[in-house]
Length: 257
Image (cartoon, rainbow, N blue to C red; front, side, top):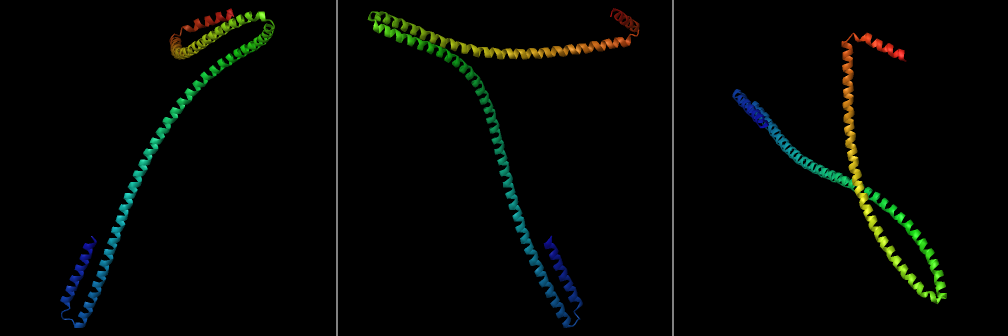
């Protein structure tokens, strides 16, 4: 569009100059010189105008290039931000999964703590039993010391002392067997407790189901009561002859009171 306007202006100037030449053929030479000088000045002005327009075109091209480069940079920035958003979403998903895993781990540790508490209580009871047994053994040791002194003084009682030791060995063997049996009993008790926990869970589920059934039954009864009330109210409204009968019942109830 700018080129067309410039060409049109140049053509208009040439047409004007031609018309002026046609009209000034009979004019003096001085007027022609002035006219030629004015045309040269106008041509110089036209050249400066064309050079200015070409410079502005180059500036516009550079500006468009800069804008295209900025658009490309903005596209790259938007793509980077979208990629970072996807990375953040994946990170949040991973954190949520880790939180769920941590919750499960905490629940498992709480259950294990309860089991450890029960085990510690059992061990404390065993320790008390062991303390009693140790005190009994200390007392028996004192007795044994006295017995040894007596038997050392009496050589004739050495055979009886050996037989007593053999009997005590048998007692220790029996004691060890009893301990092994107690350990087996404790293992069976632990397994029974685990089974009772499962039974308790099933019992709690059954109770929850029964509560829900009771709620449904109560709601049904409330609906029936409301229906009966509405039926009674409708009958009372429809039957006007029940007024004196109700008054009689009220009089009788008042007399009985």
